[in-house]
Length: 173
Image 1 (cartoon, rainbow, N blue to C red):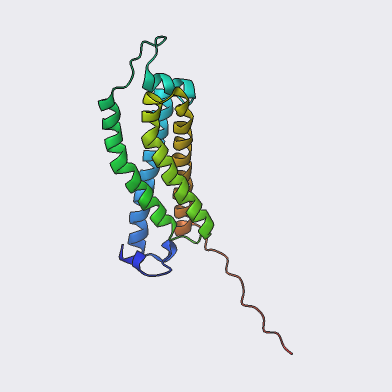
Image 2 (tube, rainbow, N blue to C red):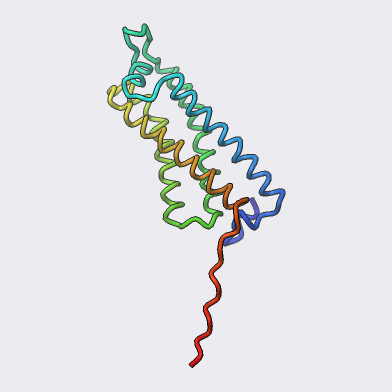
């Protein structure tokens, strides 16, 4: 982490062992992202009606509403882990040559998605079934931004060297 204290630090200039460590984290984060999508879509579904039934219960599938403590347990784990992963990913993103606006946009998308992922189940269960759309948006923002950040960081560390523009030719008068 000492590297990040230097102004202008870039992932590409990190030592080999540091880049290997970051790559290991990014690879495992990518696998975590795949399991997030697989569990969310495979277990619950990716449409508002399926999400509403999962959290609110339904007669057609004989499913019961999630209890307060079931939601609390999921929230507990998500609120301790997801923000840390988003923090690390965005921290690594800021050590890439990506444009500043892109970095800020990905940071906002990641944290907005994490927030909606945390409050969405509660809103579906206790406010309205239509809040499922907020959870779908949250999953999309969280997974989408994480995937893009992982890709940008890996390319910044291991991809082709960025093209440097040639020095401007001196103008002779």
